[in-house]
Image 1 (cartoon, rainbow, N blue to C red):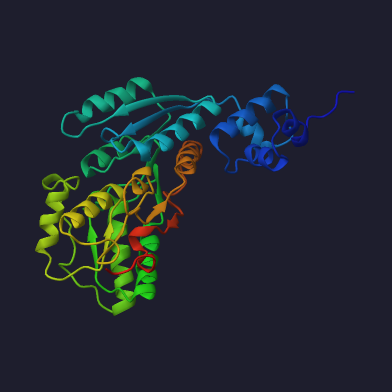
Image 2 (tube, rainbow, N blue to C red):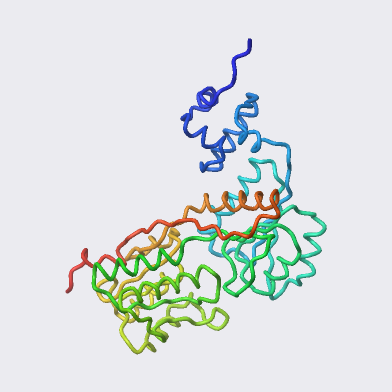
Length: 348
């Protein structure tokens, strides 16, 4: 009689732990490369014991379209995210197509025709923040999972979900932390809150933190220039905006690490020391946050999990189209570094 295939036997074949194999077979988080390896081996060994495994190894083949609302310039952030989506598709034998939509140069009719010709089952949307484009895409009726979302007010429908990070809570908590540790009260946000939902929530989180400290939320203390008319990659432009402020900030809360790096450079050009004179906080924990001195305090996002969860959510939307729209929040990890560590520095 042929010996039954077990989780243990699969683990032994792959030289992995039983726990790792069980997670992969039950749809829990493991790196996508590991999941793919486990599922392939389970298929080879004709493993049939878990329903979750049968679902993962099923014959249903979806056609998935990955849409980027603009060229993905911030590669250190997007490469692991997109790669995770790709690996998740390949592990499940889904077809994956990619399309970059540029609002200013791509007619929506061209995009709609492309979607129609492909006859995709669902869409993953990254960096899709233009209200008009998002509205038109939703109205196509295809299941969609947005990774982040437009900051514009749109009514949730039944054909899409949103994957986001816990931006409000993350920023609110670090504002309270810095206040408790250093008695800091003057915080300034740098970034365009209308750019996307995550930037809006990060700005809101800072204001919530300030309110919890002081009981008020002062206006006109931030640098909130619109992306269309301001270059956040230009330290001299940021320097000019800092000089316009009518009070002395003690801590800059930046919409992401890219902006935080340029804020640091602007402060250096103003002969302001970080963190002795002013502190800086970023977001996303990309490699650039540690590529300069001082290294920037940031928030780490498990981008591989974010990618696999985005695809998992989309497939659930495809298979259960009547499910109400959801906003799924993924937690972040605070990474404290030199840019907010005054105790490690001594005044000259």
